[in-house]
Image (tube, rainbow, N blue to C red):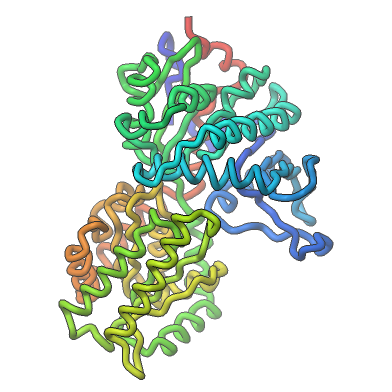
Length: 495
């Protein structure tokens, strides 16, 4: 994919995998570390953490013998350097320690009490605390010091997500000569919402320290560009793909992250997974199974989803005793009041619905807070007839993609929120709903449960093609191909 990196002349990058990386060392910065000790004493080797970002980037960092910088809560004050994993090609993992007070103000406070709800357009949940903002800046400055100590002009720095919005400009001001890319994994709000942030200019300026800024969807990228134009007075190229501000140009792209399709497809036909899938069906003893897999977050729309399940059984009593909804909602950020309230709401709704419709032989909802390992996850996808993915707002949502990649038999129905980034990718393949419209969601669920096999296969074939064509390898290729070589970084300076 060719890209234009200058308004004065076209500079084309080749589309080969990792062309933007060349022979450079990759330095990744993210909130989450890629490995954790297998036991609390740290003496039994390393275990790779779960999650789409780690699955996507860890093999690349490992093959390049790069560096991964993340934070870690703890009492120690020194950055911990480890070589991970214990076998095969390895790389350095740097863990920047944060005290409990810093975690409270920076992570739970500003990152997840201000930016997370703001970026997801939940303005009524935003808390704009000056002390938490100053902590957020201090932690970004601490990471900048660590990053500058690791970077040379033969490196490529790739910073991830809303925890580090100030970091690109901080390292640039600190003398970093390497190309810097930033990727936002959550939605970016429209200017009329983003402008509510008291420190909006500082945040935008921080991001514009990057040569490349990526988002999952075109709408998020347009929102960011509009914010730069309206709130900073930055210049924007006619195609909306380049932002120029205070002597620097930043390329803005939309590149939907994917999954490792081959991994899910191979697990879907593994005998152990197929056997576990059959066991799940037998244990539920239902004619049809709906599954939902989420973090227990207020953006995921689980209470509204449960109301739709309630409405489904009320409007279509023929599904009572015949359909079971399996909801896995793994707890997170439990110290934040909004998350505790979400858990209480979900617990109460599950209890009420089961109490209303359940019998001695059948419960309409099977609810669990326990996270699933990859094989167990695919077994649940295989066991389900319908996957219900209805966030109120979501950057992408990989569960939707994983379900489609796991349907080895070619059937199944995905019911997907139109406010998930995945809806752009799976247009025409999924049944899309407005998650706020409970009656509509219930009727769409009824449509999914009664959909003829032929239509299921047609939709799932379309979804499978889209997921396969936009897998994680294409995402990596697309982003890295857009990063300028070091020799061109200086040429991106305007005027």
